[in-house]
Amino acid sequence: MQKLRVELGERSYSIVMDSNILSGLGRALERFEFSRKVALVSNPTVYGLFGKEITESLKGSGFDLLEVIIPDGEKYKSLSSAEMIYGELLKAKLDRRSCLIALGGGVIGDLTGYAASTYMRGIDFIQVPTTLLAQVDSSVGGKTGVNHSLGKNMIGTFWQPRLVWIDISTLKTLPPREFCSGLAEVIKYGVIWDREFFNMLEASREKILALDEVTLIEVIRRSCEIKAEVVSQDERESGLRAILNYGHTVGHAVETLTGYTRYLHGEAVAIGMHAAARLSNVLGLMDEKQVLRIKALIEACGLPTEVPANIRDEDVLSAMQLDKKTVSGTLRFVLPEKIGSVRIQADIRAEEIIKAIRD
Ligand code: NAD
Ligand code: GLY
Image (cartoon, rainbow, N blue to C red; front, side):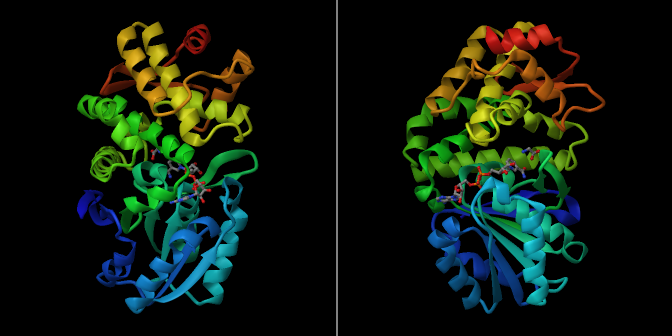
């Protein structure tokens, strides 16, 4: 079993990872000071696959378990779903020392974390991520939230989990497209932080795509380590944490302009990472050879790299302006200087952005 710490003073927590560890969750939670009443939040897809194992484990450790099942889909990452969760918790009389357990991908994790952060002014929660994206990104770092009809992730909190419990065996049932979407965030860590890790991803891509367990553990562990290191230095994104948004500026614009239906989150980020790498090259920050390596690894992981031709340049520019990462109208791009290191740059001319996207 591998264990990492996210160092955040009194809000520090462990990330535990291995294969076939879902049944060990109950035992792991016994050492916490939660009250006996806990709630498992999941969706029918994930609950159908792993619900029995987890509920048996929790009940076996003496927990009095409430199950809250939210329909599957991004549109249920909403205030109405949060309200539904609050109602179930209140009816079952969960108290301030109760704990929520999020079993699912980023949608369930973000929603459960948000509900936990607001129920009775904040109760504990545990992340049990079951998608690659959630295991390497969304379950770590404490960003929680729901969508608003006027914008994705616009309502949220910073609320750290007490434990992240990663069972890599859950990835066996994940649709390949969802798996590849998670790989985009993995590649991101290589580009922003760790050249050696990027080299390892290039060399091991076949093993990764074949879900080789030893390689997967190595990849998920290093991704979580990098995220933990960044978050420990800048929990609330006042500086460094913004580098985790590499690829997200153009990525979010592409997601918005395609109505969140054409691309999965990681796919849009993949397009954005390639666009940002090219922008670095247009600005003379990074040589073309490294842009091509980034592009090749993204493609080898089954991910797209180009902004669709039917999206207008001016629409990409205006969608980026509406992004919540834009402060006082200033767009900030996370730009690689070389594989393994990035800088944040504002004041980039529209022509340069378009050249990078369309070259
Ligand atoms: P998701 O939660 O919608 O899961 C994708 C699909 O896979 C769903 O249909 C789900 O039911 C299914 N699924 C989950 N685990 C499975 C398994 N093991 N086997 C089979 N099917 C399984 O999507 P996601 O990509 O995990 O997360 C996307 C969300 O994460 C978005 O809302 C995004 O905004 C959020 N996010 C948050 C952060 C953060 O820091 N909080 C970071 C990145 C993304
Ligand atoms: N996913 C970006 C962050 O957690 O900051």
